[in-house]
Amino acid sequence: MMLDFDAGKYAAYLWPAFAITALVFVGLTVSSLAYARRWRREAETRSGK
Image 1 (tube, rainbow, N blue to C red):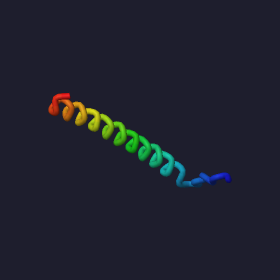
Image 2 (cartoon, helix red, strand yellow; image 1 turned 90 degrees about the vertical axis):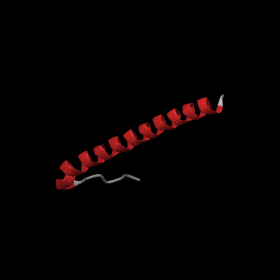
Image 3 (cartoon, helix red, strand yellow; image 1 turned 120 degrees about the vertical axis):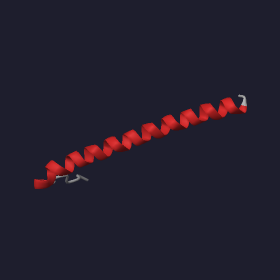
């Protein structure tokens, strides 16, 4: 099945919007993982492990 990604005259707006959305999604994922690691380290040091 082929997907039709022809955006026509709106391509100049659509593709940058997709790129920005992807970058924000990746940034949020990386940030969430970094905070989770930091919280885990802090919890382990407080519990005495």
